[in-house]
Every structure is written in C-alpha cells, then in structure tokens.
Image (cartoon, rainbow, N blue to C red; front, side, top):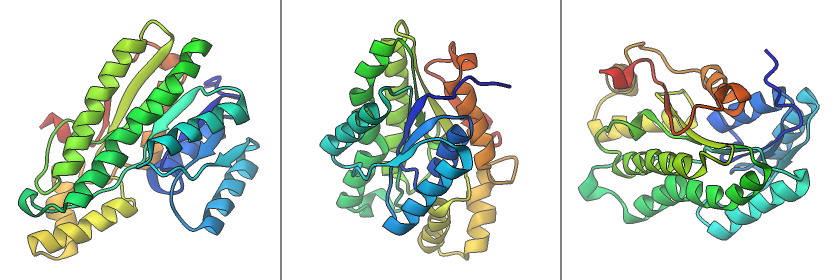
Length: 263
C-alpha cells in the first residue's frame, strides 16, 4: 500500500534508540525526512543517523534538545521547520522510568519523569501546532503506554505522566479537529527495550525475586499474549495514524499490549 508519505517531514523525540528509533526508521522507509533526538554517544548517534539516511534515501538530521528544557524543545521544532520547510508529523516518544514505593520515591526522579514523559509532549505540541494549522494538515502521535489506561504498583510518576498524556492527547484532538490535524496516542504493553530491561532489574530489587521470575510473573504476567510487543507492530499502528487512512482517527488510545487492558 502506498501511504503517500514520501517527502513529508517528521520529528521523533527519544529516537536514538529503542521504540523511538524503530518508529523513525519506519517513517524513513516510507520516504519521510526525519529529525532524530535523544541521548547517547555522539559517534553512535551520528552512525545511526547516517545509516538511516543511506538505507532509505531520505534526509535524516539530529537535534540534541534536552527534554526537560522547554526552550530547547521549541528550538528543536523550529529547527525541523527551518530545515524541511514544513512539519507534518510529530512523535512524542521520549520517556524514562523509575520504580519505587510512593513513600520512598525520590523527588528528583518524580520531577524528571513528569518533565520528560509528560511536559515535553506538551511543549513539543505547543511549538508544532501553529505550523500544522497553517499547513491545514498534521499528525501528532504521543507514545503513551498501557499505563495510560491502567496502573501498576511502584510506578507512580510513570503512571501519572502517561495518564496525563492520555488527557493531553484527547484535548489536542478536540482543539485541532477542524484544522486537518489529528492527535492520537499509541499505548504499548511491554516491548523489550533498554528501559524495560532496566525495569526488570529494578522490579527484582524492589520485590526481592530473581530477574527471570520478574519477567515471567510480573512483567509478562499482565499480557495475556505472554510475549513482548514488537517494534514492527508499533510501527504498523504509527504508519496508519500518520497516513490519510487515519484521518478520522482522532483522540484515540490505540493499544498494542496483547490484551492487557481488556482484563
């Protein structure tokens, strides 16, 4: 199927690895020019950027905005618009995690998670919306989580932030519905990325059990499919949402969690 995305421009936060990188690569494979963002070794980031550009024959750029700093996020959006002359797709994917009981939750971790997992999406949307309105077309996809819909213990900041993403997504969808701009969220279950591997170790420590038992009895216990969600499955949802086929899908929480939230 020709998704008619060739020549469009996208910005994907948190895309130097994990889910964000896979989503950016899926867009590039459809002919979309992309701005990457995220942390990591500069040489590794440059190698990944160059490889994506070469593999797909598109322009791939990088902006190192700190997702805790609104001014840097606004500058990153302005950079994308300046370089490409437009911005068709914004993927708010940047996220971190910390696992601890509420009474022991470090205050700096709470503030950092709320800033990166929730506030950065607001600042990205705030900066991108005027361009998308002027174009009379835009696609904003917020990468939420099954935890945007349900809760788990020891993840107060993450769950609060992802529930906030759900509300932000719905509000944006209502505000932009008559401007040709859609705002949706993808709510994955567990995808085996670096952040989930760290969760396994953290949960093992908090719960006092081996990591293999955490994976079986805690992590995948919630997902009836009993397997990790793949980045290819998330990419398929994303491509639908950013294409013309997804034009009437707006304010949706698109789940990809093996049936977790159906329970």
